Length: 266
Image (cartoon, rainbow, N blue to C red; front, side, top):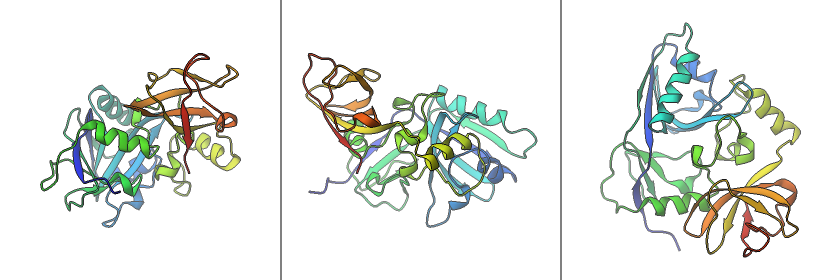
């Protein structure tokens, strides 16, 4: 049965604006998605900014064209850090970077609203907008969070650890967040090597049980081996990061705990 349509005001979102004649080429050389893929038919991109050695720093949604781009990103100090990091790479590029560390962002699930851009990660994630939608009932953040988790979608730094996580472990390539055709960008070498050589050693799985361990809690096999860690959760489901060789095994929070069920991404 299809879930009734609803909208949710997301937690902790910010907005960065990048303007100027060099803004397109500036972003293209830094972010993991192809800025040239933005079109009238595809007005929103999902992308990431990496460290120089290919580790996750930030994820965000990009919209705009003709020298005016907007990043829908994590808010408050995370937004300020993203703006500061982008400014470091500005050098002589003719771009202006401004940051709004706290703005309202709304997600719409199972509801068509012309003012919302389709979420590029998965069609089932609906749309996103900076303005409160009309003609749609409001759902809780937990409604949205469970829906996100059910689709194996990480939520920024709630799930990925800055300067540590790699994108392919979290399936960002399957969420249209990485282009392997665009050419060079910051941190490309590690991401491309993991992709082409099959070096991904961990994968995101969905986990279900009567109670969820806290984020970062270790997960174990029946033989007491540490096989992964817990990520974000909502009520009785969550995401976890499991070592590749243990993705078909039973999972426990400790040797005496109840069995947790895991499901791989199809």
